[in-house]
Length: 156
Image (tube, rainbow, N blue to C red):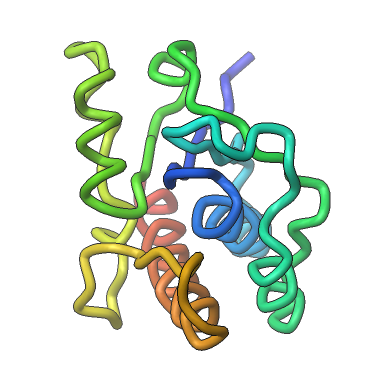
């Protein structure tokens, strides 16, 4: 039996950007007929067990994405072997993953926005301390990068 390909989205606390990426990408991958294991995690344990930030859930729901079943967790050592793609939302979290990453698995680590085709940003900015426009911008970036990631995975 073949193992499903797998993607882990990573931000700092796993309550804004990475759960949004998980929810958006899960829906986009399913619509494209991809069967994947998809999850998200944070580099910090600030919010372990908590649902996504209410603002993230609200803005995602306005676009048809349901984040309600998700709960924050911290990246685990086993994730480095378990996932084929560990996609960081920004440079700080990329550096934290890279520092913890076993060398034989570093090829799996990337910035999520490398898959974007319409945005010039190389990161998904953290909307936590900003206003509502930040959550919509995060969704714009994540939808763009999700579409690019779906296309890349379909190519193999």
